[in-house]
Length: 350
Figure 1 (tube, one colour):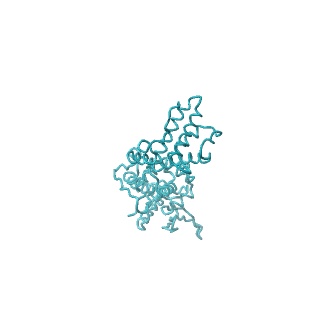
Figure 2 (figure 1 turned 90 degrees about the horizontal axis):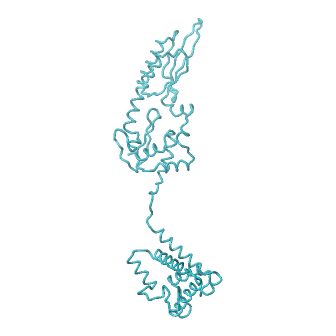
Figure 3 (figure 1 turned 135 degrees about the vertical axis):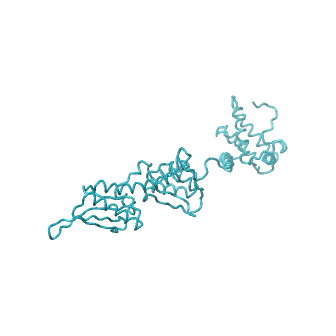
């Protein structure tokens, strides 16, 4: 409570004790606080003191008395129009918030000036905080969102963690939640909803590794029927070879399957798929020759991909063979297709 004893208002003592201009520089030099943060702290302390003093019947009178006494001090040390320094504004803005608007005529400045001082103090407070070092997750580079979208579009069955493991090999450490946010922003659904593959899409994606085969018949002038079996490469529309017979039995059809394997080896074509209809002339032996050779190639290549390249969750998104490629953030990201594009591998170009 304020009494009749002379009271020296806060901010009006000599600079050696609490002078605003000199003391601010001294405190800032010793403590290392920026001036805006120091003024914000002093302003908050003064408001707390006024809140404690406010618990009385004459709280408004005491706040007004404090403001008037400080203004008198300012007039005593200045002649003519008073110049308000930062400390004066701090001391006057704090009591003004505790007084009703009807009693603001006790101040030497207009109410708009008091409000502007308060806004300036608040602005300087947050400006001081904004100059602090930022914390939290590091910013995402410009390349990361493009890579995430590319991996998701080219690999519909990959989930967030699978994409995270592939990004780690390319030199980017990204959280699964960040990958989820990027995909949602691009309106790309999760893996189970975007992994549906139609038959035309499959044919377009793997046309370079597909060979199609079928029978057609030819009737001769002697009313005899011959059966022609042909094989065609889907992407190039190249006719690999054709054969004909009067009796397309199981042994003959199986032999044509072996001929196809030799022809593909000579041409250097790595066919992964052979498509045909449900004609009964395609015997189990035919499918066995084609399927066994095809399956061996698939298993050999998949085992190599699984052990050397594919990341695993239980191993910290590292491959089982322990051959972790050196991550780098320079160079173009290149995609290598395996098994005719069923599996994609990514690396940085040298």
